[in-house]
Length: 246
Image (cartoon, rainbow, N blue to C red; front, top):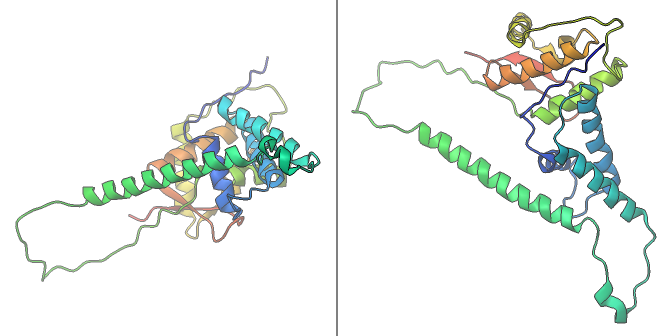
């Protein structure tokens, strides 16, 4: 019997983080959220995770239900309201979601500011005065990129569509054990051999759920270890992977 391959990822920060990512990516006005569009984009991410049989936290599914409910309310015909009945006026169904997103964005920005201050503090130290007049420095910029896990997940979903991998599967029931450490080494070698960067899709040659999931996790681990980084010229373009410059 072919047992489902399930993996839990802790890299996702929550449904509000995903919604905020979509708002920033599609340049949406947080005070006037197009519910139909945001729901469609949100569900695409959920479907991609389900295709890989990732263990999706229940809060993501709750948010999906909330978005569908708000979308349904927005489709209802608007009733004319008399001034006398103004106290019974129902607020915009998006109001609560908007408030939650604004509050979440405020705390997220504060957390990022504190993180930057922590990094700056870690670079400060004291020592006795030293002369550096005779020293030369060869500064090599290290680019880490600003690609998030949601960008990678979106690229994965687009790859499924291009390669028609609506449900990655094996034609026969067979066991395919791929140690994540081994997959990390393979990816690192491929990226190093590609001087101009390697396209994201090229790391997924097999329509096997095990291979896709392990490759995706290996990429996250390599990025976390600052071995590789992803780069995208502009929104919705192809993702390319590069080695971190030493």
